Structures are given as C-alpha cells and as structure tokens.
Length: 280
Image 1 (tube, rainbow, N blue to C red):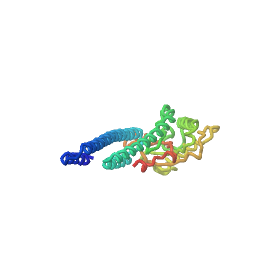
Image 2 (tube, rainbow, N blue to C red):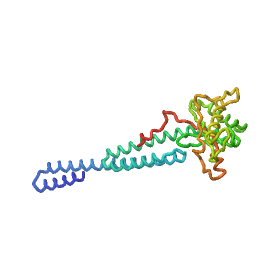
Image 3 (cartoon, rainbow, N blue to C red):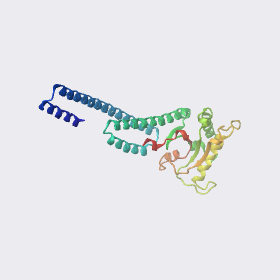
C-alpha cells in the first residue's frame, strides 16, 4: 500500500511538471485520498483484529490454567497449542490471516470452556460426598471419588467393615438419586501401597486390589432390600491396579495410607470426550 502512495505522489509530480490540466490533477488527488482512506481503514481493522486475537489468546491461557488447577492434564495440549499458535502468528501478516487466527483461538476457547463446564457440573453433583469428607478429584482427565482403603477394609483383608459399608451406602445414595449419574458408567478401581504381600490367598497386591474392588462393586450393585447400593450392575465394572498407580509417595506411613484406596471412576461419555486433535 505504501508503494501505491509513492507511485501516486510521483504521478502527481509528473502531472504538475508536464502541464496536465487541473481536472486531471484533481482526479489523481482524489484517487490518492481514496487509497489513503482505504489504507487507514485497513490499518484500523488490522489493529482491532490483533487486539481481539490477543484477548482470545489470554482467554485460552486462563482456561488452560483453570483446568490444570482442577486436575485436567493439559501438558501435551499446551505445547501443541503454543506451537500451533506461533505458526498462526507468523502467518498473520495480512488482515485475512489475522482473522483466521482469531477464529481459531475463539474455537479453542469455546472447547476449553465446554470441558471446564462439564467437570464443574459433575463436581457439583458430587458435592454431597465432599461434604461427607470424601475426596472428589480429577485424575487423568476423569472425575474420581476416592474411598480410603483403611476405612473400607482391615489391613490385608477384603471384607468390608461396618464403617466402610456406611460410606458406600452414602455414595450409592447420591448416584442412585441423580438421573444423570445413574446413566453413567463407573469403574471400581482397587489400589494398594508398595508393601509386598507374602503368600496368602491373594498372593500379591494385584490380587488384593482386584478382590477389594470386587467387594465394593458387589455391595454397590446389591439390591436396596438386601441393604445394597441399588446401582445398575450393567454400568459398573471392577479393576485392580495393585501398587502401580500411587497418589502419594510410598516413602512414609501417611503416603502409603493414601495409596491404600478404592476409587470410583466416572467414565467419560463418548459424546463428551475431548478430541485433542481438534484443538490443534
């Protein structure tokens, strides 16, 4: 655009120096004014688009920070977004390219907001369990209800304690009385500390964690008439992780206590699963 201005100025000088008429001179001057106005308008639009892009980038960064605080793992996604964002920024030399980058960031922000809203809605539904002293958290992008193993079971055993039965009944009551939660799938996951079992009927920590998960599942799907949880057996399954997925270092008694647990993992619906590739 600046080159066009220079060309017009040169033309004007040539016109005045070669005896062109006043009308021709005025026509060229009007053309210059029109181009100047277009340039200023485009510069203004470019500046406004850049400001909007910066605002959307800040919004994306804020949402990523909030999701990370909630426990949603965005480490890989963050690096991918930063790389993609740098490439977009390098390409944003024209107004059209800048607008494309702006729309891309708007789309990412909208998707991140959907993820955040989904987790906040689930957490709200499980707030009653938090009020009862249970830990509800997000691990590996999934909502998890952590049930302390020492409350549920005696050391090295898979028979539920009376205190543990009360905890499970409270969990089942919350799920059973919520229309949305009753339609969700759950994994009952057993975990142990790293102290190896020596013999016995469980043989190892894998065996102990699986059997504890099974006992919790059996109680949760038992009929209410028989003092069970009354949950659907089609929507729960059991898994044992042994010592392979600790939430705390096994170097202290308190750390090992935290690792002896059973988790009720809320499995994501296919419709709400986050497609990370769509954010790149």
